Image (tube, rainbow, N blue to C red; front, side):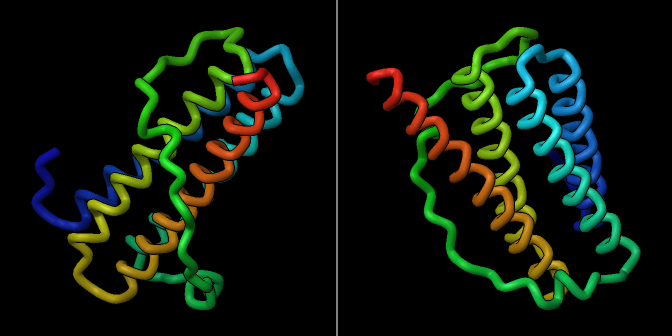
Length: 155
């Protein structure tokens, strides 16, 4: 990815957030189990929220909720770091869906950390820190769900 400026990076991030939302929506429509559909729908909603935040940054408007957002450290238990990438296929079981979602969130977190390293002003840094925290929070939740599920399965 050869970006020439932060705007190109933000455009790419907006595109990736839309791609993620589309992916999760399509995956949700293909799932038979209500819990899986709900999980994918929730992920899609979160990705659309991230896209709106990035679009607002491009317009130069920062929502009040961003200004008042309290940053806090999110622990990384690194479960997804030891898993290989997988592709979605209809009928994935719960473990596979968690695996897929963890890897997607891991990559999003790494991308936003890369963007943060290139941020040029405080407003951009704050938004990117928020997005890093959001992705880290999603990743931790998914990794915890994965650990709990695997423990129930005796692994």
